[in-house]
Amino acid sequence: MRKILMIAVPAILIATAGLAASPNAAVSDAWIRALPANTPSGGYFTLTNNGGNSLTLTGATSPACGMLMLHKSDMAGGMMHMEHVTAIDIPAHGKLAFAPGGYHLMCMDASPAIKPGNNIEVTLTFKGGDTLAAKFAVRNANGR
Ligand SMILES: [Cu+2]
Image 1: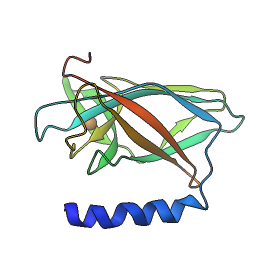
Image 2: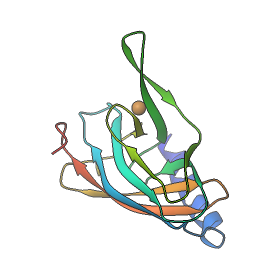
Image 3: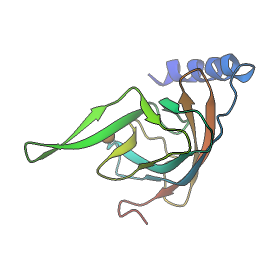
């Protein structure tokens, strides 16, 4: 698993370096929860679309996470469920909050860099290939 990832990451960076632009958008209040080993970590942030066109978030990557997924928590039949989502629209001049109980990033394979007090880099990917990099502060299990 790790061997494949170490090869795949530089290939992605090379492939996107000459092509990708950043959308007219900003990430704020970005943080990720550090949890005991092998427990997926939730990442939270606010995404503000400052442009006149809607944006579609299609994925996220981080060197600190083996796999980073877009998830949505929902109440169904009195139980909290999480589902994987592949596209999230942010309307023109709109804002979308990723927060506990709703949309979140899920770090499926946290590296040792996911440690309270650290910062990790996350790259958001949008439909059309644009990318936006942001620093996420690592907090403890209580979100502090
Ligand atoms: Cu999740």
